Each structure stands twice: as C-alpha cells, then as structure tokens.
Length: 110
Image (cartoon, rainbow, N blue to C red; front, side):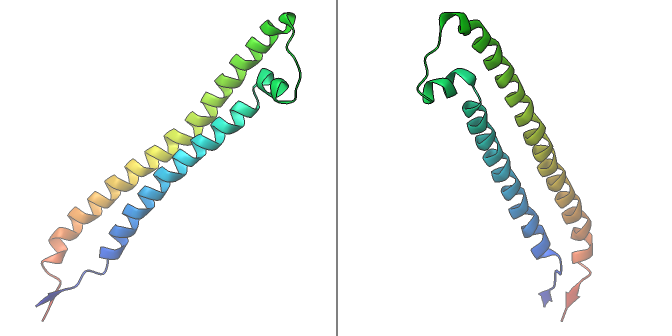
C-alpha cells in the first residue's frame, strides 16, 4: 500500500517561503541601517572631509535624532508585517496539515 499526498510538496514550499521571508526581513533591516548611517549629517560631513563647528553640534544632534527615529519607523514598517506574514503562514500550514490528516487515511491506493 502506498499513500498519496498531492499537497505534501506545498507544505514544504511554505516552510521555505517562511525562511525566505525571514531572510528578506533581515536584509531589509541591514539595508535600512546602512542607508540611515549614510544619512546622518555629521557623519557625511566627516566623510567628505569637512570639519564640524561647535555651533553646529546642536543642529547635527537634532538632525541625527530625527534620522534615527525615521530609521526606526522604517524598520518597524518593514519588519513587523513580514514577521506577521510568517506567523500567518505557519498557522495556515498547521491548519492545512491538521485538516489533511483525517483525509490522508482515506487516500490509500493499492
């Protein structure tokens, strides 16, 4: 007797999709951190070879704070929906597996 499951491959595909979504979330965080670091005003001025005057320190501090806050918001907007999607996929996969568990016993081919 051989059991046939037409949807077994789809379950494994969901697992690989979940792993790929996690990788994309991590890659997006890395990219946004790099973009955020390059947008910090005092760092770009130093990289261009300029010097920072004492009077500009407060202005750069405020701009750096705003840059860090917007970077955090960007990361949250990308990361949390992707993590929610992976959890939804896991729940749906588990529901499908449990619903097919009862069907598998009837799908026996001799």
